[in-house]
Image (cartoon, rainbow, N blue to C red; front, side, top):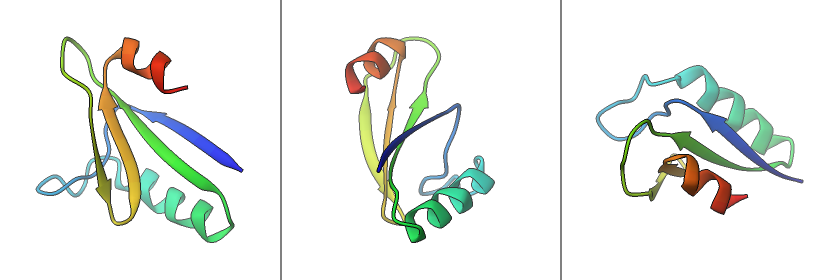
Length: 70
């Protein structure tokens, strides 16, 4: 099953504690066979970009980018 998780922040290099509890949940979901992509909703204009954090695919972008990702 594929899951898209929407959040306001997520850990990345140099910012390890941004909603770290969500990251721990995602690691558990993956252990149970779920494929999880995280979308971090940014406020204001910001170009969308993606990164991986400990093997988790993360996309950061605005609301318009979120609707494109679905």
